[in-house]
Image (cartoon, rainbow, N blue to C red; front, side, top):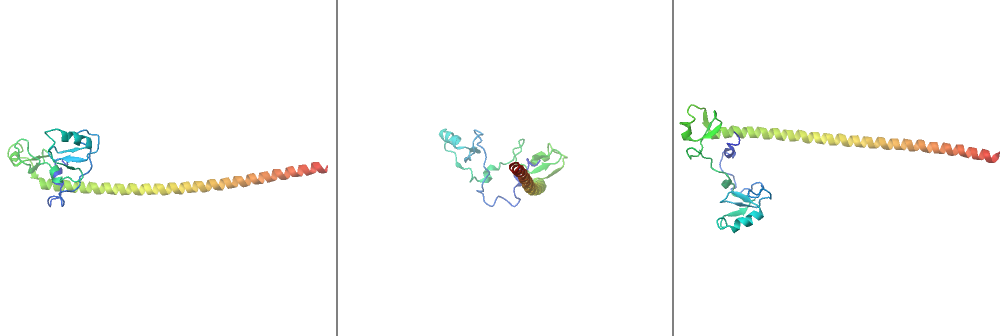
Length: 197
């Protein structure tokens, strides 16, 4: 349902504040490999630099209007959604069939169905999207907090482990020094006893 009413998820107040708002970067519609650099208004396609060069060479497309993909008139990307049976723009939503319908469909195929205004459905869909977006933001915040706690805990564990290791190395070193001094003292005692006897 959300995909069907995507056109109507735009702000109810009207068109975007700036008709030349930027559009997200996408792949080339022709080769599907490279990042699109331009947009052809007649073909309604994003093109990479290589495909643009080919596009400009064909007589049928060389006079098309091409613009930088970052400065597209967003309103041209919004296609009119029309009924395939009556070739009329959709104006209602059938709750029973979960689809957009035109005024003529209301009295024919969808007679007796639960019909509502598209703006109402779009408003509800917009609210669902807002709630879902807030849930996603909350989840991201929770995950970020968990990651920070994990980092802090791991750093503390590493520091504690390092401190304990250094302490143990110092203790073993002191034990070795005492052992070496003890052995040296015993050897000196044996040596002096040997020379005195």
